[in-house]
Image 1: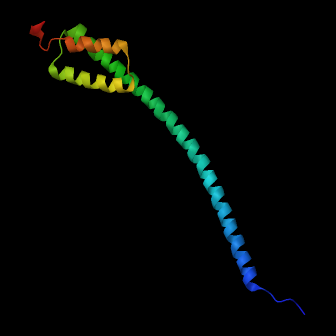
Image 2 (image 1 turned 180 degrees about the horizontal axis):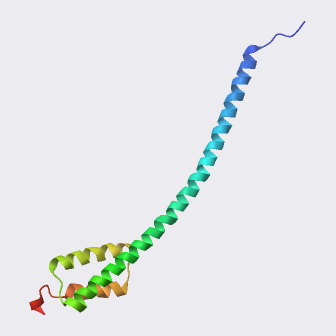
Image 3 (image 1 turned 45 degrees about the horizontal axis):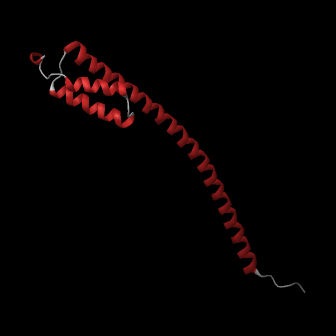
Length: 119
């Protein structure tokens, strides 16, 4: 006589094996995603750094160009020009603090008269 078949044990084992296989596949999927996501974030961080450096260069060039225009060429700067220059300089300082050259230009620009006749 054959021993009785315990279908509940067999079904439970099959279900457990299926769940375990699904969990393993899910874990592998998460690991693959994590590795891919890490590489993507690292690449993005590098690109943002390059963009940030480029922005600093553009801002620096713009500040220098405008300062020389006001100080050397015109000899004065309107209130609006000073406000605009000061705003950009403040933004530049938040990215690149303690920049003696640009700070010295700021002092020169802010000390300029606001009208040509005030020279």
